[in-house]
Image (cartoon, rainbow, N blue to C red; front, side, top):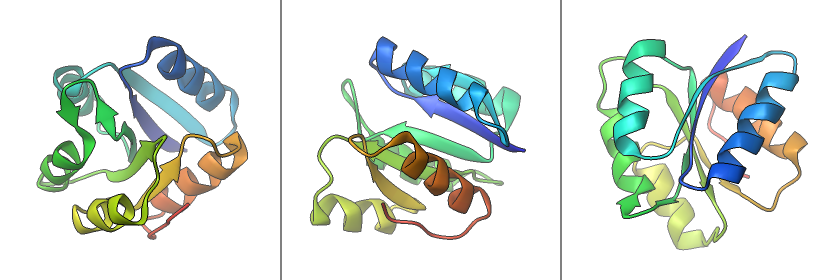
Length: 126
């Protein structure tokens, strides 16, 4: 069972991701956060295997949060989730320690595959 934390500032997207993860065998959505503060509270309580982290989280930068997450004593795998998947962002995400960069336009099965790979601690770029 891969424990997943969803972090996105858009309520409908956050709720949708949470719902599809809860319905998919092999995943357990341990929480959904709207910002970095909520992410840290949920993370410390639940210790997810994978964090699906929005690249643009309101005024917060997902890459900066990714670096902070990777500095944790037992860091989760991080998938940066974005509507603007450029080569430069992909390089920045990987440099920050993300397991990969996932385009928000992909089919949900592609996202599931990326989470599975990240949950096994293998790099992924989708």
